[in-house]
Length: 499
Image 1: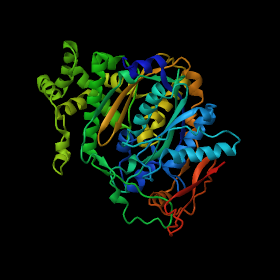
Image 2 (image 1 turned 90 degrees about the vertical axis):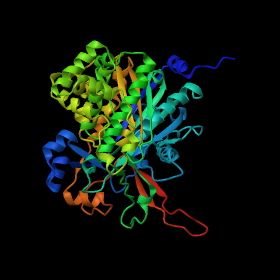
Image 3 (image 1 turned 45 degrees about the vertical axis):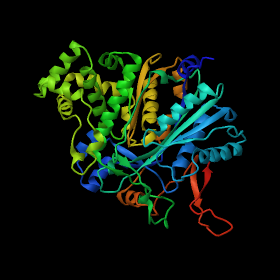
Image 4 (image 1 turned 180 degrees about the vertical axis):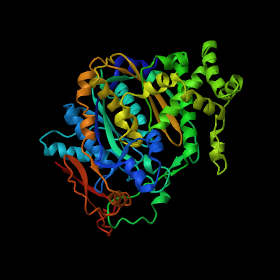
């Protein structure tokens, strides 16, 4: 018997996203205020990073945020919980090394029952996907494959939830963030079809791009709050190099599968959504990607690339030679090598390209949909790209843009190092489905922190003057501390729904 082709089945079933819902903790830090506290240059921070970020609260965890976003998705889209047969959690901030998405399911089930509704199906799969910021995209791909193979007729939820936190005084501090975005996936989607058959993948081990070794947790004091500080080991310039290189390889894989002209295709797209650790990263990533697409193109493309090379006083042939090379990025993972660029000539040409009129049209305009809202979120790790997509769809609805049938090219990236490039095709019913996202509503509750409140909350200390009461969200009620012979619950979080 001839084996079936999963990609053809995926196309026949037309599987994709029908809903999005978000939870963002209300605790906000304005970066202009942060610059005053730290003596950092506001003009540079605004241009490179953004405007503000959210901080997880004393009673937040990755699980409470994920559960709140999931419950909102179920309520906002009138989902029958008994039809949910796949609940995937994408995160790099989970604090339990055994259970994952089932914790989220347990919280949501308890709240649904209290509301007089049925719980999520007992036959629901509950995997957790962890690969830095790419875990949510991997979870989404897992859900699409589940629906295409053994979940026909059912629905899947993927929730991306993370807490991005960095030590105070570190270069990563202004790029912090926290939040969760839940996605409803099903056959005949009302928001967008997810076309895995035309996607591109790439991966390569990069040693010390961005890591979270468990050794960091040793000796942490949890006497005042529930929080474990999850500061990563990272190397900023090297991380940028890895982001760019892996994105280029994923794009090449997509170009090969689709048999398309790279530069022509990138020019044709109106909107692109990328992983966004901070404002400048996707701008640089897309600019370099476009220059490489020109390098892969025809004589006209090479001619355009040559004009940017001339502005940078660099020979076109030298740039093309660099683009055709395959640098060993992992070899840069040394104290001395971390400061090197894998593509120094192309980076120089990119700086010249940034000053041309075409940069606005070919890069910034394609990244503009939803960008104003995302500047106030910081880095959400796995939830960064889905949050940008949610904000973009809402902006398109508000501006009465017609996206029906359009390709939205999405980029997922995970330090460590891997990338995915996946085309979404906007469904005819996207307007009605977008009205239920309520992303702006999720961003609305905001409690602006003072310098002392921020320092205390960030460092895991009590914030005695905090005047905020959680509403319609899950919180940590308490953490177990028993480890006697007959009963152990040390470190286990107990939750409640603050209705």
